[in-house]
Each structure stands twice: as C-alpha cells, then as structure tokens.
Length: 438
Image (cartoon, rainbow, N blue to C red):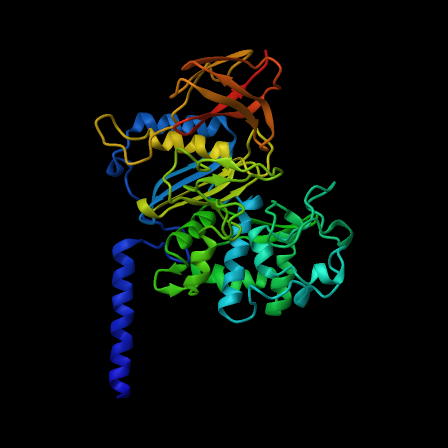
C-alpha cells in the first residue's frame, strides 16, 4: 500500500509538471536565463514596436517587459536603467501585500473577519472603542475601513490621523493609512518581519529579488523589473510557480482578483480590475461608468502605482506586461497612462493580421492635445457632455448637445490630462483629452 501511495504521488507530480509546462514557462529561480519568444510569432511588426519604444521613452519609462506564455517577447530599458537596477513599486506593491496576506490566511495565521484590533491592540485609531472594533482585515484589503481619507496626510498611520467617517464596509476610499497598517498586522500574526515573510514565502520560491524599505509612514517595495515580471507571472498562474503552490488558497485568490465589494466593482483585494460596469478612483467619491481600461481586454487585472508602476495580467492571452518609471501626471493611480500603453500594444499587429484586442474607444477627439477648443465626434445625435480630471472632479458640464460633431471651449480648463464623457440614449462613451498651454 505504501509503495502504491508513493507511485501515485510521483504520477501526480509528473502530471502537474507536464500540465504546467504545456501552458506556462517559468524561468529558473537562480541565474539570469529566461526563454524568449520572437515578436513576429505574435504577428507584431518591428516598425510598430519602434513606435511603442518611442512612446515609452517619451513618457519617462525606465523598464518595460512583455511576457507571452511566460517567455519574454519584449524587454526594454531606458535612461540608464538596466536589468540589474532596482526601482520602487509604489502602490503596485499593494497587490504584493494582498498576496502575502493570502499566504497568512491559508496558513491559518489570519482570518479575514478578524478585527484589526486583534493584531494592533485597542486604540490604533481615533475612533470610539465600538467603532474601532468593527474594522476588520477584509476592510483593509478592500479599502472600505470607513476611516476618513480626506485629511491632511492620508498616508499617516498614527491614531490621531485615523478618524471614523462611515461604518466599515459602507464607503470605498483609496486610503493608504489603513492599508499600510496591514504590514504590522502581518508581522504580529506571523511572528516575523514583513521582509522575512516575503523572503521565505515568496522570493526564495520564485527567484524574485527586492525588499520593503521604509519611506515616511509607508513600506515601499523595491526590485528589478524582472522580479516584477516574475510576480506578474505568479499571478497569471493563479498563485503557482511551476508545480509549487505558493498561494494554494484558491478561494482567496479568486476574491483577490474579482470584485471584492459592490461600492467599487473595479477593485478586488488591493488589485484593480478591468471590464466592470463602473469604477471609482483615488481621491474621489465619483462612480464612473464603463471599464477602467477601455482599450484593454476585459479580463485584465492589474497592480497600479504612482508614477506608472504597472503590472497587467491578461489570462485570456496568457500574457503579462510590466512597466516601471516616472510619469508626467503625479496621481496615485495613473490609469490613463496604463490605457495609453494598451493602445500602443494593440497597434503592434502587422497589417492584415486580425486584431485580438478590444476595439478602441468610440469617441474621436481632436485636436488632441488641444489648446482652447476641441471637437468630439459623438456616436449619437443627442448627448450630455462632461469633462473630468484624473481625480474624478468634473471640470466642465454637464452640457446638452444635439449634434454629432461637438465643439467645446476648454480655454478655462488648466493644462493637464482629462477625459470627456458623453451620455446618450443608447449608452455612455468616453475618450481621453490632453489640454496644453502655449
């Protein structure tokens, strides 16, 4: 019987190995070797890749990697950055924290319904005892703690900065303070430092490098671009690294990469989701209609950070791409830049190749960038037009129009990145708008 059991285990091992090798390639956990796939295998043209490279360089990119089936299709570095250079993940590290929390959940060290006070002790907020006791780990993972984010420093983790504004679970707000306090929760629950937990449960199993480093109230993860790509590949394989089940709690992973609450359908556990009917943004309480990245496949989920630190995971295409660098728009989540990169990726197909991506936005906006006037070609004859800045604040409209070619006076709007939203009888439409000054 024991011999039969061993044979069964071996058969299972090789079956899993065979299944993994048929779907995804995983680079060795040590060394620099990583299999590649020629871009022309995806039907991409070299001149179009040059255009993507130029766009990335012009927008402060330091590193860009595109993986297909786990193999490197594109790997680009700019401005003196290299494969050995470390760079910060900013808020893209939130998804990494969610993943590490999931490992603690699967090991029974944390339960999502545990109160945060169980690990931080009473008095970690400026709320009453009863109010504080209602905040739990799930609220921290979903940005629904109910704590007030509209304070002078939303990164602050001191009790004097954490004031109750709404009942936990009743309000979504992108609030860094409660998120950052997941770090001491993990340390208390696991009995080791955040970096030790990351090292033993993630890095040694996947070949990632990097560390969490203190920055003000935050702990910010720094690593090479390839390490960020390795994490993206780990997400694509649903928490598995080849046959190693790094995050085996499939229910947790499913919740992490799907709508975690109804207040912001485009948000899982510290992870952004495309393809939802609406979304909310940091520093805003506006619920915007449509998907977060209209030019990306609907099943994309992403880690997004300040200055354009991106991990995009595309299950339907068995692909991942990452971007590190700076961005001209200093916003917590530069989702517009992420979508612009998607537009360039969509354009990589050679002429005659059938596109596999979603069609671009329905709105045609020109000139773009614009100075004082802009024209919008509307899909409908009667629409209501509004313009929003990247924080979700309306800066124009709503204004009614009864023509398909709309001319807007935007001379009173400051220079910056915006998007125009049209609402008609048949649906809603939007497109990005760049305002410049001369």
